Structure formats: structure tokens, C-alpha cells
Image (cartoon, rainbow, N blue to C red; front, side, top):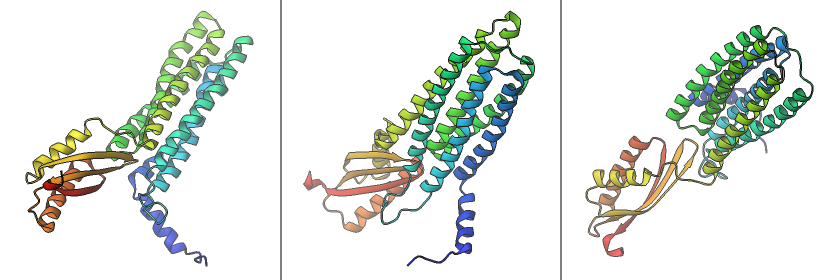
Length: 305
């Protein structure tokens, strides 16, 4: 039997979500991406430029990506349940994968438009006004992308980092676009507009594959850092001098959560209580050094080696 609609419980859930800094940042991304989309639409509208149209299309994908990110962060924030005993952290990787696909789809649209522009060059209107408007959008994107990447690394959020890198690629696109676009009214060579659009498409494809690679690595449980195993061994040796060794270390990353399990070899004369205290010290030290971690330690007596 389904539970009746309870507005109070929904209100409590919304309040909890708004306290999550990752979700707040993703909501901020939605508003920023709509603002930048509007500015780039104006730049295209006043110039009738293929290059500015291409830039606007990329920003349209930023809007969709921001919506994907918000939804994925909401799912990732859900607690573990009967069907998902390890939690829902990997939802962030699905968002990054979806964003990568959207980026590649955008590149195809831009290539098509640029090819049409090369065959039928368009006369540009008010190019310098378009440059000013597009440049303003680039400044907004620069500030926001650096914010997302910095806080995404601090919060260990693949979705926020992917979103920040995507927006940062948009900034470099804007810089290159404006640098080349200034030459069009000077040399009066209209095909340069479409060539700039093609360059934007190439850059978008590069970023799309990078985002896809990161999401696939996460879904395939690639070790987040090749030096992390040594870090774990050093922490064990420092905070558990009674332990003889640790081995069979396994690590996987799921969103902001790091899952670690390993075998800890201790003297066979230790009691269960003493071994448990050693594990507590190790877990506390690992959590302090790494952040959000889920640790599983299998204790072995030295006689078991």
C-alpha cells in the first residue's frame, strides 16, 4: 500500500538537499548557464555569425548538462537502501557520461552549420557589438568554471569537476573565437567565420572525449590515485605500530566516496578487543587523510600467513 502524500516530509527533504553544497552549486550552474545562453544568443542575433551560433549551441548543452548534474547529485545524495547497499554515489559518473555524449552531439550540429556557412558565406552585422556581448559571457563563464573546479575538487565531486571543465572549455572557445572574429571585419574574408565554427567543434570533441574517459574510469572502478596504496600503507605503519603488515589493498572511487578494503596482519596473541582498537585508529587516520571513506579491514593473525 502506497504512503499518502506528505508535504511536510517533502519540505524536510528539500531543506536537507539545499544544505548540500554540491546541489547548491549545481543549481547555481543552471542559473549561470541560462544567463550565458541569453548573452550568446544576443551575440548571434546581432551578428548573424556561424561562429557565434556554434558558441551558442555549445552553451545550450551547458544548460542541459547543468540540469543533468543537479539530478545526478540528488540521486547520489540518497542514502544506501535495500537495493543499493553501497549507496548511489555512481550516479555522478552517469551524469558526466551523459554530458560527454551531449558535447559530441553538439559538435556534429556545429560542423553541419559551419559546412553550410563555407558553401554560402553570410554577411556579418555589428561584429564588434557581438564581440562585446560574447566576451561578457566569457567572463561570467571563467569565474564560474574556476569556482566549480576548485569546489568540485574540494568536495570530491566528479559531476561538478566535469561541469567546471566543460564550462572552462567554453571560455577558451570564447577567447579563440573573439581573437579570430576581430579579423573578419578587418580583412573582409567571410569564410573565416565558418572556419572558426569548425575550430570550436574540434575543441568541443576534445573536451567531450575527456569527460567520457573520466566517467568510464569511474564506472570501471579505476584507482583514483596510483599513490593511494602507498599512502594507506604509510598510515597503517604510523598509526598501528602493533600491526605486522597490510596487504591485498583494494580501492575504488564512487563519486565523493572512496571504498577501501585490505587485510591487516597482527600478532596472534592480540585479543579481539585489541585488534578492534587498532582498526579504529587506522580508520580514523584514513578518514582524516582522505575524506569520505568506507573502510573494511580483515584482520589476520601472523600464524595465518
